[in-house]
Length: 120
Image 1 (spheres, rainbow, N blue to C red):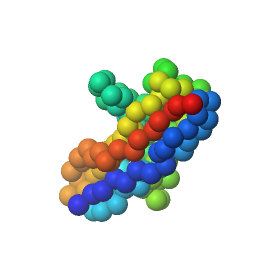
Image 2: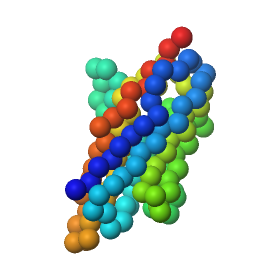
Image 3: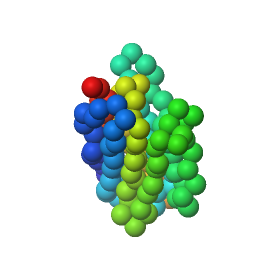
Image 4: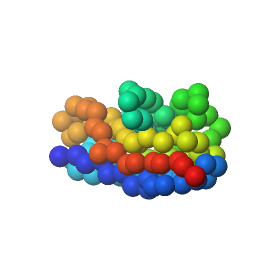
């Protein structure tokens, strides 16, 4: 019914930048909050950033000033611009979206994840 497809992960050196993208498709009436989470090996999944439909963003403390979340409502996409990357940012990054269907029911969907490795 709904798919979230992430792209843009990869290997980058410390101090470098990456841009992650996530596109939602399927039976979508509207999308409320969207966001990015990450999970490093041996750790729990944690919030990176979220953004409301009207563009209000929220960030985890350790990414503030380095990461920027944005979205295009018309395209059902959310991006994460990551600058000044650190080895601690290494993780699988997951896209999340609160999607309302045409029956006005809202469900939470996750993408399959994209790997980000920050290493020299």
